[in-house]
Image (cartoon, rainbow, N blue to C red; front, side):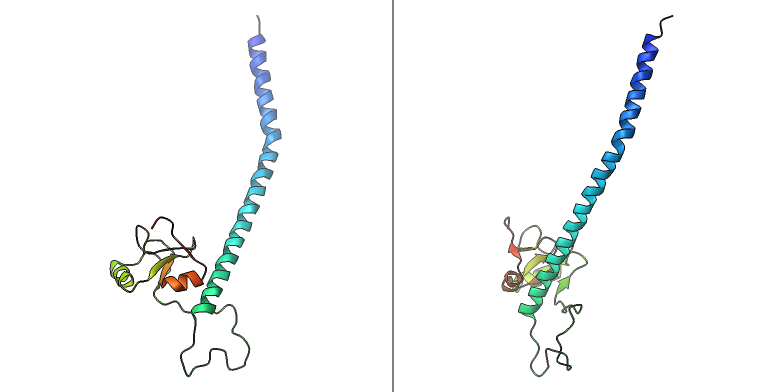
Length: 149
């Protein structure tokens, strides 16, 4: 009997097995390397967002008359203290009454994740992480106008 067909199949199977075993560590290294870059992108985004929030706090936060803007000790406020947001909706889209009130007062909707503000249109008050503010405040905080509104 001629077993050449079986031998060829057996050799091909062995070849694919060896190829798989030798290439899997290289693939694992490539995947580990790509996850490192995504974490650095995440930290870059977090730093950019913190910088934008700090700029918004510096430009728009003024103390009411008769109160001190710094603590009584004379040292600057800790960075961990976040300014209180007015008309902020960080948990989701706003209700239709909030959207109507903001439109009538001339406010824009700022998408905090993308750094874009909307004057109206499809995404006004609809993005998951955003808040209402005046257009001047949005520009001062470093947000950019939407191209599609």
